[in-house]
Each structure stands twice: as structure tokens, then as C-alpha cells.
Length: 103
Image (cartoon, rainbow, N blue to C red; front, side):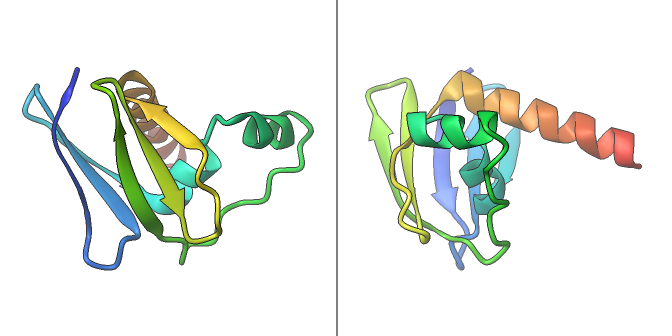
């Protein structure tokens, strides 16, 4: 799947991605920050040292990377997370699965 539109909400706490299958998925900035896969973030996750992102976290920049991903910068200073389209769909699927289990 490929995005047809990517936009931030007015307070920059959510990223909305419209996909070429007609679906639109909203991602919270906190969820995306927690799922960043840069080397330092993965290291902290593996070591169990990752701190949950604040719900007030915002996305400060959205930068397209070629035709396969987007780089996001966050209000906590983190700016190394590259999110390929496939990974964004995986994040959404995992979040839906967790929500179903909690319901």
C-alpha cells in the first residue's frame, strides 16, 4: 500500500495517512515515537529502558523519504525515526489487535 495523503491534525498530536485502498488511519504522535526503529530507540527497547512517550508529544516535522517512507521529528527532540509505508501499516494492525484484546 502507498499513501495518497499525509497530514497532521491542528495540534500536531496525530498523523493521518490516507492509503490507496481508500482507508485512512490516524496515528498518535506518542505511538509513533514509541515505535521508532532508529538504532538508539531499538537499543532502549531491547534493554527495557524505553520510556513511554508523553500524551502531549507533538510531531514537529514530516519529511518524505523517497517514495517509500517518511521521517518524523518530535517535540522531545527525536528526529531519526524513518517509517516505511509497510511499517506504518504494521503499527496500525498491531494497535488494532491490542485494542481488541482490551475490549
